[in-house]
Image (cartoon, rainbow, N blue to C red; front, side, top):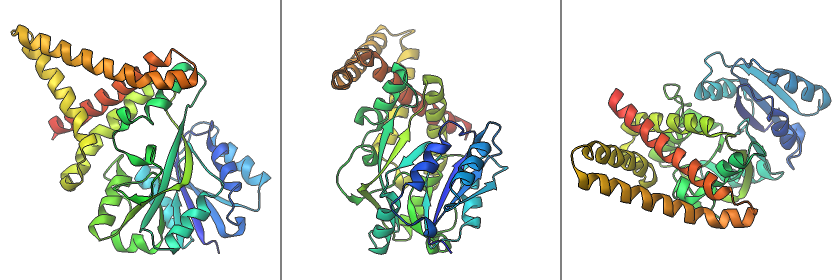
Length: 327
């Protein structure tokens, strides 16, 4: 029986699912003690064919596919959990590639009781070769884009409010319950909030590293961050004490811009205030993008990174406010 169950929600991941499975196969942890459970949201592309081809080529690693007809991430995770046999549960993503020591380090930290949930640092990579894809990847790892979300850039181990993916002992789910299927996203943050409410620790270990492929275009990025903002408010209504400054700033900024925009129709001072705020905002973003453009030797990133960060901020903030209005 495997000691580690790797659970993965996926839907139409034909472009990256083989990369994930190959990186799991390359783990330093014994294949005989691992199983991979893919909860597929009834993919309409070649995801299942890619998985089947991998299974045939690598019979020494147990890979299972379970159906996720609800097509939402928390339902996928719960379906995979139901099929899992391991003592340790490690969540990964169809857009990710764990480093070779990922599983081994997760299990070691859990055995040393570093935390009830342990996770590591994302290395954000572009999902394509275009300059905008590279801009989005840079923005997704920049403090201007993600605030103090330490799992994007830290090199210090510490207790945090959340980690990407996560690794747990199976018994933890008996104590705090499974993933909340009433949330279409932010299910991991909500789960970590329950862990902390039960006195548990969410531990970030920068030695645990994985690659995450960012969105390839601004349209996909906008939808992603709108969804993040919309469902973040739903989660915060249950756990208001988990609100962080990085989560409050985007909706506040969008609200200020909207308010000044409306006031500017009748009040000239409001118009100038809005112009000054936006100019300062864009100057700050451009200055923050200069070191990235210099390192990558691509001046187009001076425009691309600010565009990506603006998309993240405004869509997250607008989604949050829309959720507030819906309520």
